[in-house]
Image 1 (cartoon, rainbow, N blue to C red):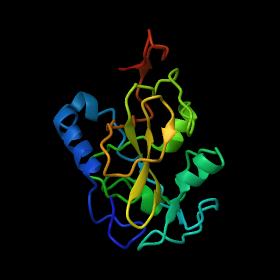
Image 2 (cartoon, rainbow, N blue to C red):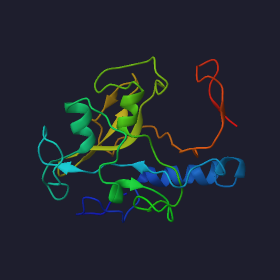
Image 3 (cartoon, helix red, strand yellow):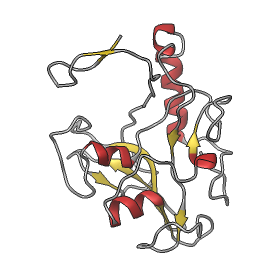
Image 4 (tube, helix red, strand yellow):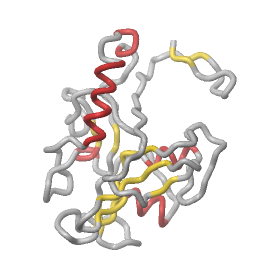
Length: 202
C-alpha cells in the first residue's frame, strides 16, 4: 500500500495487494476449515525504513519526490547479507487486519507476500541462484520488500527463476505472485517437511 508523497502511506492498494485479496476471497474466506487455522494477529512486514545512501543504514531520509531512496531490505541483503525477522517500524509497516491490536491494521484479509529477509533465511542469496531449497519454483515471483526508488521507478525484491534474490525489476514488470498466510501458533502439523513427506496442516 502507498500514498503519494508519503514514506509510510496506506491510502492506495497496490495491484498485487488487490490480486492477493481476490485470491483470498475466492479460495480461503468461505472455508472455515481454513480460516480457523489462520492467525489474524500476526502481520506481514513491508519494511519502508529509508535512506538516501546506497550503502548506509536507514535513517528516515528520502522516500518521496525525486530523490533516490534505498530501503531497509536493500541495506540488509545487498550490502550486509544480514536478514532479520524483526519489523523495524511495526506501527507503520507491519501489515495486519483491523482489530489485530498490533501493526498498522490496514488489511482487509490476513494475507500478504513473503519478505526478502524470509527468502534469505530459507536459502535465497542476493544475486546467486539456488535450485535446492523449498522456495525455488523455476519461475520469478515478487516479495513484499521494497528495494529502492529512483524518482521515477520503484524496485521491489523478487525471487528470480534460478532461485536467488534480485532487486532489478521495477513494479511495472510482470512477475508471479505467491500469497502467504500465517498459521495460528496452536495449529497441529503432520509430516517431516521433506519433498516426499511434506508438512500437512491438520
